[in-house]
Length: 332
Image (tube, rainbow, N blue to C red):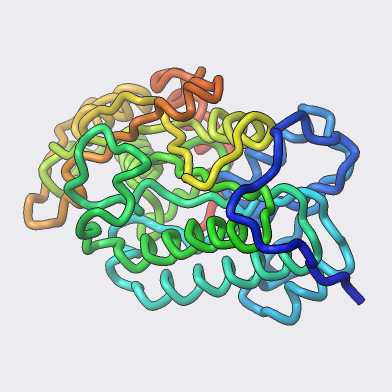
């Protein structure tokens, strides 16, 4: 039987961040995904000796009884909640019920089980889509819940906002030093390159690479190409996660990004150049653009002592190399 949490309710968390115990049991929820696999690699590289992961086939995080049984058996000391149902504009817009229901269940199950079995330090990962569609740029953490969400991914955003609030509630009610981090658009090895379920950057890599290989004269992208997006390599994200767990504590979520952005048109041109596509790019303006701009204010992260290290050109080249090496085994 698991021990119940008996910490008295406190408004203030009494905790000083410090280096995590490299021998402490560390559960990475979603360790096969883009972010989770990068965090796993980072922890391995940092000398963590007791990493725990379960595939979705081994543990369905939407199954509350199974999640509680897992936590009761494994008893992790540290947790990163990187598991989520994710997708691009098309997937979010087409299946809002799935994105809301699945993510709420995953989060509530994992966070409730982590609370019951006394997880010492937990990092919840959200998304920059939690912020209002027309938030002032760059977006500060205190912009949360100050305006209307982007309609094409509002269901996913609401689920992630609920996760942030649950972390804050655990801090208030139980005094546990759990934190949240909100990454910008991520990319890198292990991404989803599906034509229908991927985010913009991996979708563009696949589209331009296939066009280059087939000798196509043109590529057509959604929207106008004018929206601005910030892109962070997932290995940088993983490094930031460990840094925050060891150097930051506070109720407010922390933005994780580079602090710079480019237009979708610029990123398309860069990808075309990297993959060797020399044809014409056309834009289908009947399709939605999504949020006009989404640039994060990363000053809180900088104050915690962390800045991104992997440049966009370097990151794109390595991601294209990974995609080509794994093209035959990628998800459809």
